[in-house]
Length: 609
Image (tube, rainbow, N blue to C red):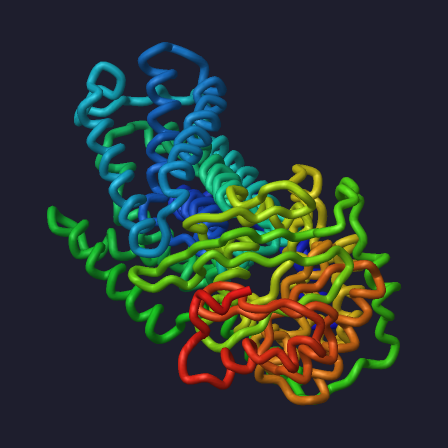
C-alpha cells in the first residue's frame, strides 16, 4: 500500500471525526465567544477551500475572492429587506448571483494569466464595491442594509448560523475531494502545470476554468448570505474588502496550496490570529496595521515555507518512510510489460470511424513568418495512412514549426491542413486531439509536479459531462494508465513524481500519455534526441508496434540512422519548404538532400521538389 493510498483511506474518517467534534461543541460548551470564533473560522474555511480550487488546483491566483461573499450577502439582504422575501429565498438567490458573477469572471479572464489575472480579480472586487456604494435604490449606499433578527432563544441564537456554516463547510470539502479525485480535477492540475500542453492532450482549458470558477464561487455566495444574517448589517466596505481576500490567500498558502486539508488548517490559524490582532490593534488605524501585519506574514510564508505546512510535513514523513523512487537510465521493459497490441486494445476508444482515405494527413502550401523570418515558405507534404513517415532537415528548416501548425500549437499564415480528408487548420488544439492527433515535444513537456499516473489520467479523448465526473485514479482511467505505462515498460514508476524520472524515461512517459488519447496519427518530435541507446532501441520497438497495430506515425528527427531504419517514407525540408521525398534509400543518395545537409547555405527555391 502506497503512502498516497494510506492518506486517502484516512481522509473520510478524519473528516467525520472533526465534523462530529464541531457538531458537539455548542452542545457541550455554550460559550458565545468560542462559537463566534468557530463561525468566523468556518466562513474563512469555506472561502479558503473554494479559493484553492482555482488558486491551488488550477494555478490561478485571485485577490478578489471576497467579491463572492459580498455578492451573496447583498443578494440576500436586498431580497429580504427591500422586497420582504423569506430568508430561504435570499439564500437560494445567493447561489444564482454568485454563480452568475463567477461565470462573468470566468469569461472575462479566460485569456488572462499570471499578473494580468490577479489584477483583473482585484479590479473586479473594487468595481463591485463602487457599485454597492452607488446603487442606493437597492443597496442603500454607504448606509447599508439592516437585517431582521431570527427569533431564537438567547442560548441558541448562534446555532442556525453555526450549524448552517458547518453543513456548508462539510459539503464544500466533499466537493473539493470529488474534484481532486475526478477526471475534471486531473484536468485542472494539468492546466496548473502547463496550460498549453494540457490543450494538446484534449483538455478544453477555457471550459475547465469556467466550471472551476463557478464551483469555487457558489459556496462563498451562500456563506455571504448566512454571514449577512449573522452580522445583521450589510455595507460595502465590510464585504468587498481586500484584507479579507488577503486572509484567504494567506490561509491557503500557510496550510498548503493544492492540498485538501491545507486551507482548513490555514483558516484555523489565520482567523484566531485575526481576532487577536483586532483586540490588540484597535482604533481608527487598526485596519491599516492589520493589512501590514498580514502582508508581512504572507511574505514570510512565501519565503520561509513556500509549500505550506501540510506538504512540508508530508514530505518529511515520506522521506522517513522510504527513499523516493529514483530514476535509472537505460532501463529496459519491465517484467510483465504489456505487448503493444494488448495495451492498445485497452486504450482503444469508440470514436467514429475515419473516412477510408489513403492519405491521413495532407499539408499544402503552409506559410508561417516570425517577424522578417519565414519559418515555413510554401511547405507541402503528405502522410499515407498506416505508415511511419519522417520529416527531416537541417536546423531551422521548419520541421517543428510544421508540427506546431498540424497540432494547433500555433496559427498558420497561409495554406491548408487536411486530416482524414477534412480541413482542420481552423480548429482549436483540443479539438484536433479529440479527432485523433497526438503529439510529443522536442523537449519533454510532462506535468513534473504530478505523478506518472496523474499525467496519464489527464488526457481527454472527448468532452462529456459524465466523463468529467468519473474517478481519475481508479476504475477505467487507472486501467488505461496502467496499460499505457506497461506499453513503454515503466510500470514500476506509475506512482513516482514525473519530474524525478530521467530524460529518456520522461520521453517514454510522454509517449504513453499521448497514446492514452488513442490517436490515429502520432506526431513524434525528436523521439530519439538526448536519450541513451538502450531507450532509443526501446523507442524503435514501440514505433514498430504502433505501425503493426494500424497507427500512423510522423517523426521529426535528427538521428539519421534512427530515421532511415524505422521509416518508410521521408520528406526533407530546407528553408521552410520540401526539397525532396522518397524512401530511405532514395533520400540517402539524393544530391539535393546532401547539399542541404552538407552545403554552406540552404538549398535555393529553384532546387525544391
